[in-house]
Image 1 (cartoon, rainbow, N blue to C red):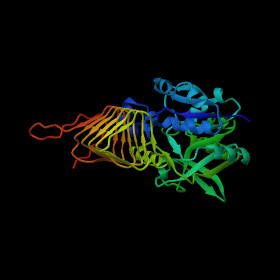
Image 2 (spheres, helix red, strand yellow; image 1 turned 180 degrees about the horizontal axis):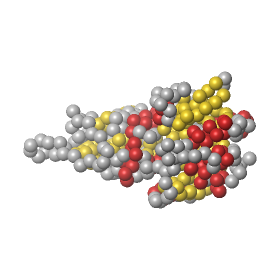
Image 3 (cartoon, helix red, strand yellow; image 1 turned 180 degrees about the vertical axis):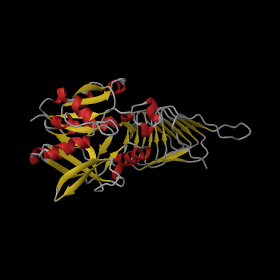
Image 4 (tube, one colour; image 1 turned 135 degrees about the vertical axis):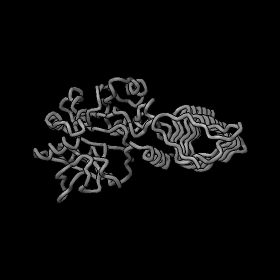
Length: 358
């Protein structure tokens, strides 16, 4: 039977504010590529050609950024969601698109190494109605948590205060048509959402077959800034060195390790230590870029140091006095040193920002 893909890209990204005040969280770049691209690529690599992306109804940001899917050799349909009413609601409104086909449901802000084809194959061979991916986590209370007895999932709880295991149900699920019976029969939770965990519990309670596999590599739900930085590290760690056309590295510079230099960037009297990526048209001058750093396109960095950070496009980091580390800078951010007296620190910061000073 044909397999389709459903990708969730809605929600408000409240834990990633202030960046998500002006940008959908699924379009935040990891290693200079929007998170959502990784989900689409995973589906395409599994042989899926029909994908639906559920978006916020009040924004066309995702359709404008992603397009019709031809870039990946797939056809993308967009399904607007009027309000963030839960993941089971995302599945419910996708029923006309899915029809009676099997499908993989992928949360667009999740990332997993190695793609999803192995889970698709396991679902097909298992004869399961629902196939869940599980990952060991330090904070299972943030997720749907399975209770496993005798090798079978007997219960799934959403964000439990007392988790029954240290597994999270990761954001990659595979279903047959019976999931629509579940999502159309559950009631909203106390927080007013149709919880996907309740849909899974419905299937368990009504005798449907639930299969599962543990993700043995790495999986990240990029819901928090620390998760973004860690996902960026993991992606860069698996990246090969590359120098694109038009790159200019002068003789005084030292570029070592797995470094991606994108089209037209310039490295002048600087050190770059991989794994790292320097974006298209970026200029790094008299500076140091350390491991696990992504520098966005058209960013200008002079007399500064940055390491283990994500710097989005169009930033200016000029004469920063201390090394920037473990940081996430949004588009067009400026960090500049001034020469005025008295010496002061002056900030213009959006809602829910965080600044640490020494």
